[in-house]
Image 1 (cartoon, one colour):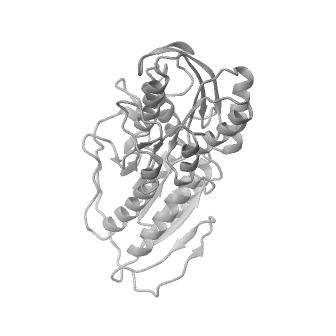
Image 2 (tube, rainbow, N blue to C red):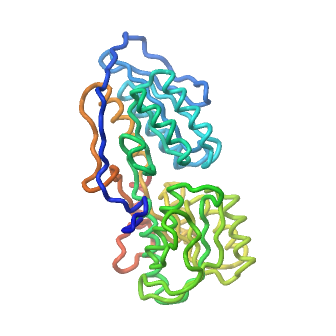
Image 3 (cartoon, one colour):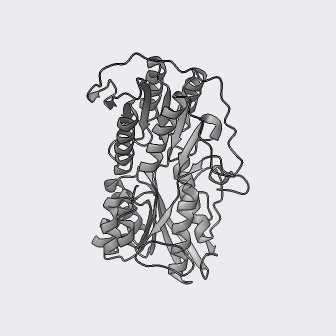
Length: 373
């Protein structure tokens, strides 16, 4: 998210270094059935030409459909490739303790690799221990800070996703004043995806972010330069933990403070859905924009409860992560970053039924065949 360098905008190429990869041939075992592991996840077993590769998929939470999509895709790919995949998750988007425990478990188990959607920088030291122990580490969804914390990241450019909905919002306003509610993930910790999406939205609107490292430091009023340009104010900025109930509660608080809010930025679609419930009760028809592009969210876009969302491809990220671990363990080569990037960019698309000039978008009908692929 920067030219003066925000993590989401860093464009230096990831320098992926490899120690010698030790491939251990394991005895052929009978194909096992799925079973629960000690951390509450599942284990997908199989065989591939007599070779069995163990890996750990560590998600943010199991309650968010976004990460459920990752789990489903990863398990399907693991089954196809004969990868023994242990799946676990934190109890919330800020639960780094559970993720650190899962990383340590993977090291102790002698896994070949770890695939993680990090809950924060507190897990970085554990990931570096895993690399030292010879595990190949892959991040999904969010580029760690620094990017070299892991061997490779498969992710959406979250800043670009935020920028897309910011540009759409500015175009839709067509010069009208913007009275904005910012519904972020947290306000007690710095989570890179939270900062990247928030700042991307502000960049798309043409509003300075204030502090490139954290949310909430932008000027609270001034002029936005996106679209035709106009005046703006940040009426309210509250955490939602990316959930429907907290999204609704935060929006209710914002409307009590300023009933005239006409733009709602939400860090994800669950927070946006909660906000939409609060807006409907107050008979406020504010523009609501979000990020994720979930299939289950498309009816909200169809009905106009959410006006636009930036669609990502979590299934693709997870599948590529599992495949990379299997290929590396089998000596088939090593994956690369996208040209000029610190990560492999899995893409983003804007889903809306209200296309704006100059803003590439996909309508709901077409999005149904693309969402979360």
